[in-house]
Image (cartoon, rainbow, N blue to C red; front, side, top):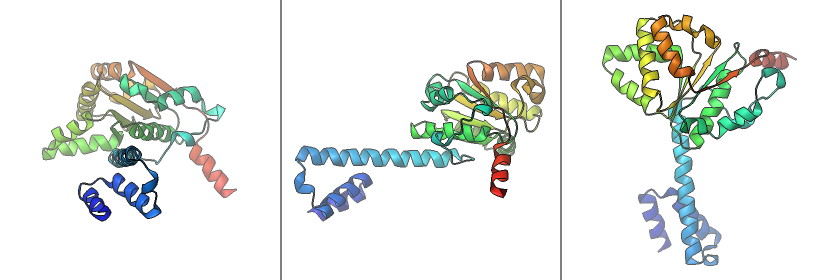
Length: 246
């Protein structure tokens, strides 16, 4: 009877229940449970299994640059990071409010890692997240324009609760890039959140975008209702290399 039940669980893809019931049988604990306790244990195991698989799926789809976590962030005072502010970002309430986070600072200072850590946290809370290197995203969308898959790619971006635009401003935007950036920002305005990381200070973004009118429209939507992190200090990568040599 138990074997038949296990087989049915497996066929119905109740993998959490399957493992919990199988473990209970093998350990001889089934007799220790009341009917209510057994049902509760099986349901809880299935719930946790589906949640964990959902998180793994979200992490895979996000395509993060780093496997980062909030617990591993470096809060050295010379980096100008407010631990309380980062902790608030960790509850991801900014996503529910459709707010943005702008992270600026010199190369190697840890901008992408912080953005990825917040993104990982968002995935663990059930949000849909997409990480993109900005220049590569623009290149991908230009190809999509040419092969007819542009609408599909933009729709995928629109479905995300949070998108991370990493290394914003490494390359200036051309006319086509500006138009595509505007479309992405316009679609998300008031509907989703963005984390932008850049080596370039926010007050220089007008020059990167290029067209004054377009830049005004884009930045008004990004900067409005945004939180800012302006990182300082030496390159974390350089410090790591020095320590490795030492």
